[in-house]
Picture 1 (spheres, rainbow, N blue to C red):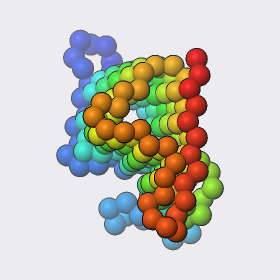
Picture 2: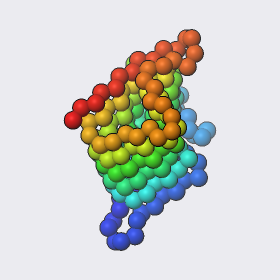
Picture 3: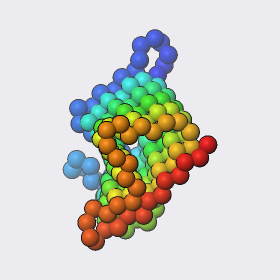
Picture 4: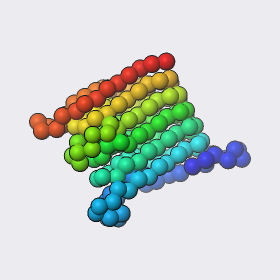
Length: 171
């Protein structure tokens, strides 16, 4: 989505989720032995959805926001690894954020990653980094506000899945 600069903001509103990169999304499949990939790039405007889910099944995907506003719950690496969310500017307002929510289920060792290079990330209720999977959260520049909840780095959701998470602040 790109804001054309004509004075009217570009707006994308989705009643449910934006799902990027998945092997079985909403009953649609790219094939049992194939991996589906997807990418979403936001260059301005306003994107609003119930949630953004990146990486379902053995799929992988990426979301890049360079400017504008995203309003959505974030689930990066729902059941797969190697998914990325890159914020180079703009504002992300997330009701909550899961980073690597069960990515170990499909045995993908590639970490799921959130890189905040510029802009503002607001998470309202919680930011969980590395839930039963491998995750990297890197704050290079910009601001991350966890407004009403906790920032949790490295936790398993039961006794059989373990998390491997890192968080790095630089700049």
